Image 1: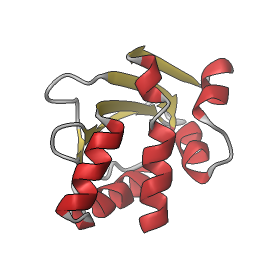
Image 2: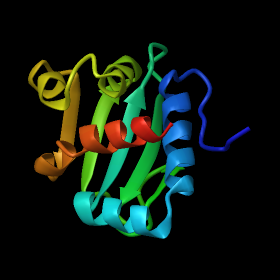
Image 3: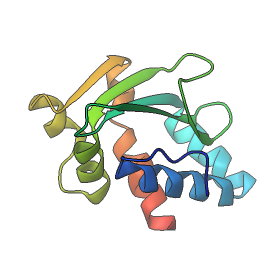
Length: 127
């Protein structure tokens, strides 16, 4: 179906949904989101089989979601498990709690990582 999905990852559907929402944004909504967030997130997600999938959420330049490493370089790289990403998206945990308990690691602009919750919640409201 979508080339953004990766088999064996529960969060694959979530990322594909986020991509759909970004594509449905009007130009004004997209510009508003870019202005509010102004960052490129690279998600490195590992599953129970110890495989890793990488997705990029660009909310700085283009307002798009794609599979693979960030081009240009990510402002923040977030390393977490498939389950943790699903819990974040479902609101079962928050980024700060996941970070403090070692379930989420960051490289780069850690303060920007705090905006991921808002991006996920905003997209979830549009689904």
